[in-house]
Amino acid sequence: MLKPSETAYVPFVSVENMMRLVLYVGVEKMLAELAAEIERDFARWPLFDKTPRVASHSDIGVIELMPTSDGETYGFKYVNGHPSNTRQGLQTVTAFGLLADVATGYPLMLSEMTILTALRTAATSAMAAKWLAPQGATTMAMIGNGAQAEFQALGFKAICGIAEVRLYDIDPAATAKCARNLAGRGLKVVACRSAEEAIMGAQIVTTCTADKQYATILTDNMVGSGIHINAVGGDCPGKTELHRDILLRAGIFVEYPPQTRIEGEIQQLSPDHPVTELWQVIAGQAQGRTDARQITLFDSVGFAIEDFSALRYVHSRLKESGLFQRLDMIADPDDPRDLFGMILRAEAAKAA
Ligand code: NAD
Image (cartoon, rainbow, N blue to C red; front, side, top):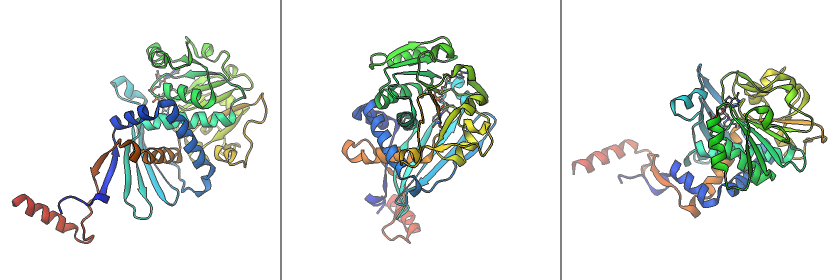
């Protein structure tokens, strides 16, 4: 046999097929379904194998591996973060990921994850806000209108019932792009000329900027009582978005503390500053928002379990949608010990 056996083909979800899947399911429905999948996995958090992601830093960016397993299925994501990429016409964040069967170690699926990361990040943000934001929130400020922005806006519409988004970016072209893409999707979209203008009347503020420095997208005096902050862009050592004083006034909710203490807004605080793990709120083991005046902060950095949930969601849609290609990626001879024989048979076939 020249070709590996049928079981050795690995389904591969290309960028094109991921886009088709989003259109097949519908973007808001897919965001809601991803949020439900992530929430289910957060509810069984203690089951997972957890580790802070493995990061390789350079002066201008980071390349990371994000592994986890629930004992039956293993997943990892490869992801980069290079804020200066956009100046060269490249994405700040690109990713791909893999699911594997723990019982055999064989890959189950390889997938693009640049689009999937934007979807899972928005789904996680909105899922967290569902638990933490003030009741009846209808307006969100969206500061940073780059690649993630529309996904965030639509996630908050689909999952939290947000009706108005107020956009601001230091680059007006990014705001114009975001407003254009969100037109006709059932959201009131307001383009603003400053972060101060964007947060006017907003019960939820999402910061999703990209700059490899300690930035101050929100200062303390901009943040009134009762709001929920969804801080997405501060996700690396030396890369934050909020003034430290805001953190001192907020109830802080995180994904996985050992990773967030290195990468999140809370890298600005002492290592023993109290934080609540979001999964505990979902599992009923910790309180979310305590009162209407509390400032809640989801210090999002992105954790491997969210990628695992997203990959499993895509995997569960493969059969029904048929949106994948088969990759000849595992060398799997009929006699497992005759790996070299595969090459010999290929040589003989070529000569024949
Ligand atoms: P992007 O480069 O496409 O967009 C970032 C936008 O922020 C740009 O339009 C830029 O002009 C704007 N910006 C930079 N500084 C600003 C400032 N001071 N005020 C207002 N706007 C400003 O990047 P992206 O793919 O949209 O990602 C945004 C951020 O989110 C990145 O930092 C990325 O690393 C992070 N991210 C986090 C997660 C997570 O799970 N927490 C997931 C994906 C991306």
